[in-house]
Image 1 (tube, one colour):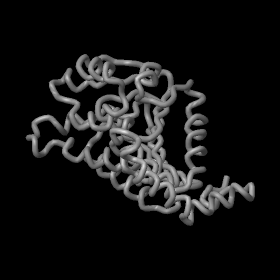
Image 2 (tube, helix red, strand yellow; image 1 turned 180 degrees about the horizontal axis):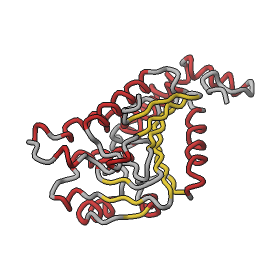
Image 3 (tube, one colour; image 1 turned 180 degrees about the vertical axis):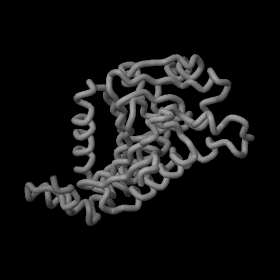
Image 4 (spheres, helix red, strand yellow; image 1 turned 60 degrees about the horizontal axis):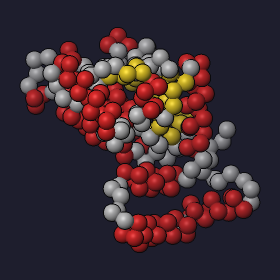
Length: 257
């Protein structure tokens, strides 16, 4: 559709979700939120999809909430009320999600970056938690951002609203990698290829494992973790992976090149 703000495409087991609202810097308008949520549901439900890539058109990845729509609305009518669902979809997706940033992210846009599993940006990309500078709080996005950032950096950047570059974003845990613009697609492809080598059920279970609180001591967690591990060793997927390793071939879940 010519008037859609989010495009969805699947090639070789990779679902690419593209924000395409450059006129307002891919701000999270009502239409964009709706279409993004629908696309994430579609990718999560499609067994043929192994990895999700979240990307954009235009010079900005995402500027955060659409402030034009926010102006004059009461608390119950603010678009931010719909945003937790999108962050939850990204964070809990059983398929790994890779963020591809060819430009800046602000506020809610950074919340989405933090909710993905892998995030790659160009060196020129910049970031800012700009909420306090317009008199609001980075509350919703804190739930995805704070697990990624070092505590000192979070206090500094949330409270000052200062802009920081991609190099700093890597250093504090927001990004996995920052690369020259001409290497962005290759770096994303490298991560996508690596992620697609994992078993679908194993990846989903590992994502869930990474999100769970850690037990106070290893001894408190061994029983549950051993049950999980042994179950996967004996599972159909685990047995296929073990057999493929022995036969020096790719497991049956690896997409064709």
